[in-house]
Structures are given as structure tokens and as C-alpha cells.
Length: 270
Image (cartoon, rainbow, N blue to C red; front, side, top):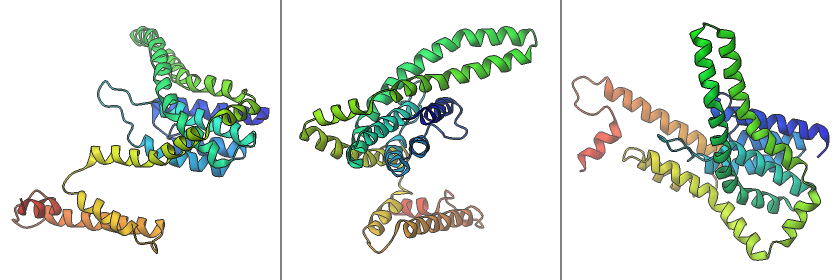
């Protein structure tokens, strides 16, 4: 990468690190981070493909109670950089994307360790802010809160900068050293990422009211003449019909029910 590209990649990584905490503009999401890195490095198509694939997996990542989800920011940024390095070294796009997908999960787990370090450093910052609040020093509170958020950005920016200086030839040498069975395994595993991500999401939101839509979507997806845009229009239409029926059920005159028309229909069959 040339110096301008490295600066832009590190900037994207910095934004992704902060967004992992802020959740304001979603720069840490794989689809956004990988696309931006692909854009600034001249590999936009590969970045979109990688980001879209990883996003399917990240859909199921969520903080539940004290359990912290894998770090999507580091996984997105680092895997995208490794993909770019592989492409710059002359690797096939499919091979580069498969390799990036394979290392995404280990990188997301490593990101949890970096998050723990940064949050440990932030503990004394909180106490400093408490002291500033006791004195009514709002400027100091703003300064230390911004500094704490910037530490989250640095947490991703430093590893990103380090990866950018890895010679492309070294990445290509590693790819050439991998046996055929490992390459095939990573390709198969990358193809399963989307299925695993959807399965995790469905497991969290599955109810008897939404299962009919799930089954209907499978049937419609089998019709080859329907494009993704057509399937999206059908899905939106079904959602609007469902919401309309739900409002009618809620405002019905003296009609007993839960307010969920599909739920009431299914209850009648139980």
C-alpha cells in the first residue's frame, strides 16, 4: 500500500474502533468497514463481498448481560487488510476473500482481549471524571470522555497500521504454502458463514408468529425468476400487511385476542 492508502485505512480503523462503543454511524459493522477499506485501497468489489459475507455472521453477535460479543471492528478491519495485501500480491480474489473470512473469527476473539485492556485503562479515567464532576468542571469531563472513546479507536488503529506494513510478498508466500485441503476447507467454511449467522439470528427471534414468514421465504427463494429486489418487495409487502392486520386487531370492537392476528389464529389450532 502507498502512504495515502495506509493513512486512510488507519483512519477507517480508528472510526471503526470508536463505533464499537458509540454505535452511532455503524463504522464497525463488517459491511461498512470492509467496504470503506476496499474503497480506499482500490478493491471496492472485493471489500463489498467480504463485508457482506462477514455481516451475515456478525448479525448474531450481541452483548447479552455480562457476556461481551466478539469484536466485529477488529475482525472487519484486519480481515479486510489481509485481503487487500493478498490481492496486491497477485492472489485470486476468491482465494483472498476465503482466507480473510477464515481469520475473521480468531481476530474477533483477539479483539475481546484488546477491549478488556482498554476498558481496564478507562477505569482510572472514570474516577478522574468523578473528581471533575464534584468540582463542576464540565470541560474536563468532556475532555476525559472524548479521550476514553479515542482509546477505543486507537485499539483498532494500531493493529491496522501494523498489518499495513506487512509485505505483500510475505502474504502471498503464506498462501502458497497452504495445502489444497486447507484452501478448500476455508472456502467451504466461508460459504457456511452466512448460514451460521442467519441461524443465530433466527434462534433469537423465532416465534410461532414469524415461522410462517420464514417458510414462505424459503418457498419464494426457490423461484429462479424472482430477483433479490422482487423478494425484498414481497417481504416489505408482507410486513406491511402483517402490521395492518395487527392494528386492526388492536382497534377491533370487543374482539377478544392478543392483538396479534397470526398469534390468535395459531392459538385456535392448539
